[in-house]
Length: 276
Ligand SMILES: [Zn+2]
Image (cartoon, rainbow, N blue to C red; front, top):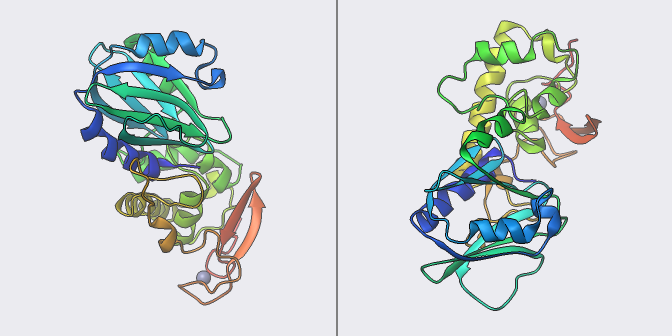
């Protein structure tokens, strides 16, 4: 599932291709994508919209139009976006298509169909996002103190707290496991129990893991690809994720796998000891 670095990579790649372009025709073939609104209605409103900029909030991609409206795209499990020269050949699992005025098109694909498209007007956007996502971990005002406040008083496992998008925006299974390994914190540690020092380490580790993910253009495991179809390379940098039984880079102990918050969780049992 695409996380913050994957969505940010898509945003960076697509922005120069889409900014200033007008949607000449829109097709949405899957009613699940736009519900509760009818796909034809949303497609009709998209036609004629001119893209101004592309933004991101957490894992949401924001395609902003000059009209003030925003198409809020969430890729969920298996959604992806492909930009190409317009073609009559449908891609596999193609669910929607935006034809642009320069002869190119943006194709949305989604095998599992959990992705969402919401076309929101300016006064809907902020409340829509604020109800769903907490602070941006890469924003300049995201401090260790702020992180400490988000975790304070919470007895839930640290991993579960970090996967909750209202704690922080954009983290998912991969980057949480990688950040916890860097910060030497056990994923089942009670979220509210971190010392100031541990919070400081976690704050730095989260930002480093996300920045590395962006620098490597995301992790391609299954469905994620750049808009031109190329793969990211973050999967080559994993320290713990998916590496059960392999030696920890820091201490040599074999990486363990467990389940926390219903998700496969990888960690080093020696340098991520559970203290509480
Ligand atoms: Zn270790």
